Length: 271
Ligand SMILES: [Mg+2]
Image 1: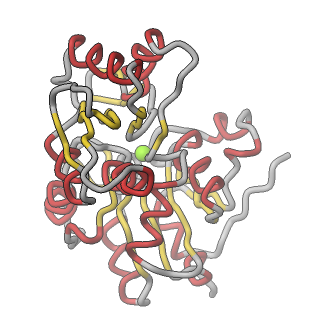
Image 2: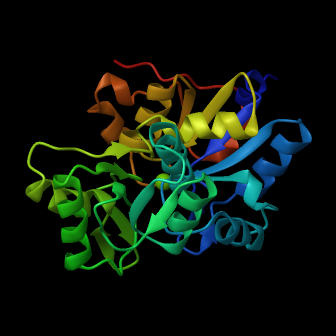
């Protein structure tokens, strides 16, 4: 029996709705990851969340029974920092509107994270960080109006919580867009391709597959990066969502959850 995953040498996994749901692992996730590793397939955990540092994510996954090191984790903060390092002169000052983890990644690529706007601010970088204030966002808007380049880690409009949908990074960026009329940030996270490009660069491989539960970030991100994709039904989106999705959000395969990787492939055929 040929398993879906046998055609690939790198598998990138979205986290929420794919590997875990709330506090619990998705059934079969730990067993599936272990089986992939036994086959010699590279495994990466790829997240749009720029607030959590890689070691925080790897500790979380290890606690769910999925052994993991920070090197197995790729975040939108890392991908966005990589994009900025390619665009900006070494040492350039970047006004970080985000977490300490994001500031660390900015520093790690040879740029200078700052928390106050000045005439030498070359760029601003916005990442998920609920303690950000209205005044912080205004500082970012003023810097961009003075010529700084605008980067952001992801554009998810909302995020599921146990109490309901919460405002996501894209909602905060929309508030800034109201002041920065006609402007849009350069994006590092899914569905923009830098995050999957960074995953391939870091982990290696020639035949990558991405596994995700959201059509607008995971699957569109895979299409944009030229990766095949597996859409799993263990998280946010359903087959009804897929039926009404534009072609750029069509996956290569569909499955109930990550254990579909070990079963014969079920290709998605748009009707
Ligand atoms: Mg997800």
